[in-house]
Image (cartoon, rainbow, N blue to C red):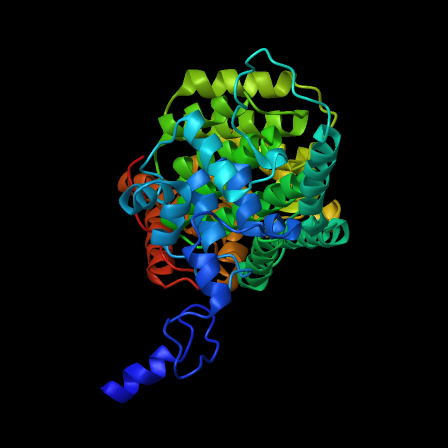
Length: 477
């Protein structure tokens, strides 16, 4: 035991420097002066460019700044709370509360703490002391002002120009958005996660203000697409969490177009989880932030279909009328410029109208729009082709044929859908097949043998596990 104590006594408890055997203290002379001094030491100007200190100043949290000061690598070892409390002339318990955000500080205290730590005036976010009416002497004032200016600008040296990185990330997200609509989900999901992680990594560095906002926006776009991926995989709970993250990022970036898209995607999630009234309300709220005709068309189409799915004929009809009256010219915004899943071309609007008419039992209109959508997808640009939308449009045709009693024709239209590869069987397809089975079953109960057999065939198909997991219940809002 005595040997251990002797060894410990010969090592500085702050910096680890080897001490002489007869040294009477547990710290070297330099550390003893620094840690036991009644005042905080003077620090170099580059001290204040530390990212943790810059973040604390940006968030205007002095407790966080104090903690960043204590753990700064410039110090030989961690500055203890006891030492810091002595420098700030407060008790250690009070300091602990301040660091954890549980001890509010007055303006005078903040100014006192700033003086004690020699915080450059340029980094003060709190008001300066009120003027006493006296004029400060000019002698030396210009030197002090110049020194403070240089101290502030020295903190800017860590601001990185990440323009090329942000451009590359935007290009990656655009490629993923385009691939999303015509490739299996499992082939794009990993790229989405990588893009989100890249955005987070960029945000961990000090960026220029405009680039920081752009990075938050791109991170939000990645989370928005991850929400769609979770929904397509039958995991609405994770989709809801991704949408919450996308909303928070849109708020930090103060990006209206992203907010509008997040609200529209939230409406879709609620529509597919049978909370139709909430879906309509979310789609309507999205118009508050919509900045393009494309986004407004999407919100109206979602509102119409969600209302129809919930049996609200009047709301659905009114939304269809407003959608039809809109200018057909495509006007994009920062989100729709990504393309793919993040846009709403005319063919997608046609598909939505067909689906809505089918839910309203206007099957002739539904079949007409479904045929038009399928034809446009087949002959249009490959980047706009969506296997999910095409499949659901074909089911609208199947439903129209069942409603007309043309079961043989419905069976013919259904065959390519039932032959769909498992990796393309998103959860929405299973939901739509369930509705088709219900329509066939209703006709079968009225004595239509072929319809009853079709319903049984669909039951067998739905009992088979899909490549994507089954949906779970969405938690209450």
